[in-house]
Amino acid sequence: MLIDNEAKEEFAGGAGAGLEGDWADLLEPRYLVSTIMLSLGVALFAFNEFFVSTAMPSAVKALGQPWLLAWAFTCYLVLAIVGGAIAAAMKERLGSRGTLTTATAVFVAGTVFACLAEHWAFLIGGRLLQGLGEGTTIALCYALIPELFPKRLVQKVFGVEAIAWAAAAFGGPLLAGLLTEHISWRAAFASSLPPAAIFATLVLVMVPQGARSDKPAASVPLFRLSLVGAGILMISVSSIVSSQVLMSLLLVSAIALLGLFVGVDRRSADAILPAAAFSVSRLPGTGFWVILLMPLASSAGAVYLVYGLQMIWGLSPTEAGISGALMALSWSFSGILVATVKLGDARRLLAFVGPLLLVAGMAANTLALIVDQYWLIYPGQAIVGIGFGFSWGIINQLLMDRAPESERDKTATFVPTLQSAGYAVGGAVFGLIAGLAGLQEGLAAEAARGVLVPVFLTGLGMAVIAAILGARTAKLATGSDPDR
Image (cartoon, rainbow, N blue to C red; front, side, top):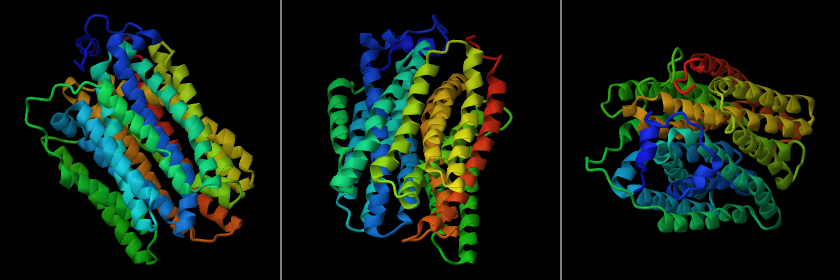
């Protein structure tokens, strides 16, 4: 059976809860299949993110639409949010194996669309399908963690995911850069297809279908999801309109739609948001804010760093792609290190140290643009990655631990969806700022620098807010851990 009874009991606080697990425990027959499945899901997500982000500037240049950088990023993540929100309902209808294979098929279809795109609309369409497929996959992987593993192994699971992320990130940007330079950006996009095929094959062979729920499948909250997607897309559209009046109208409308979503969701019997979402005075609300704001701040680099390295300093796609690899590898290896930390209060302190390191890394990237020293970006990206690695798994486990039993699945699914929302909102906001600063095709190096400095300064400000809320999360969590 897919869900291990011992895992459920230990996660809920039964006998043996609080004991520290060993890495070798994940290789036991009862956990091995689950470990492989989650690792493959994370690796597929990482492969696509790092291959595509390195090749996208060349695709944008070929299609002659510089604003596609923000749109391709935002549209992908908006549909990833939708995919994350419908993952639980799909699992009830199709089972675990059916959901994962269906989501992979959607991702493959999107990748083919993007590879064959001769017009920007097909590229955007491909990114939409990719986002829907991968958002569903990664959300289901997160949601299954508390069901498949006892609490004593959850931190180790995040460590294994970091290893999978490192494996995908290490060669991803470099290979995408080489393919883009020596073949084409289309070849870089197509390189996601073999890992997707391997993932689907192993899921069919190794993952049991799983019991479907006897209860009627939950309905998909299309109206509320439409409010979120429309709000984020309005922010993106505002970045390319020329009228200041229309831009202001779009921004006000976006804020109104997102506010309407929160209000409607809180009154719904099948709310998407956990009850304590976004509280600034108690857990898990402060942790949710950190999960949102850290990706939001770092998306300034995710969208525009490779572009800046190529446009301002003339680096090749391969050289520019190293910055993304450094960030990912630092995240992965620091996450593995943190998974070995056993003292509860020491782990919770990292919920503050991580966002603080994000501030330091974003400051280095911003300084690189201001003083015209691109080498600062590489240590800056490494520090950003360490910040995520130190805090990400800790906060994820903390949110799962503190969620009421009735909201545990909702919380676990909401975490990767919220992460995608942070990247999506960040991509839209920074696209708007870049548009206001004068982003257009054919910018000279100095003009491109003038566009990116306000983008990165804003990202730095968001990182500071994340650090403040990270300190609040650490204060609320330290000293009250039931498993100390």
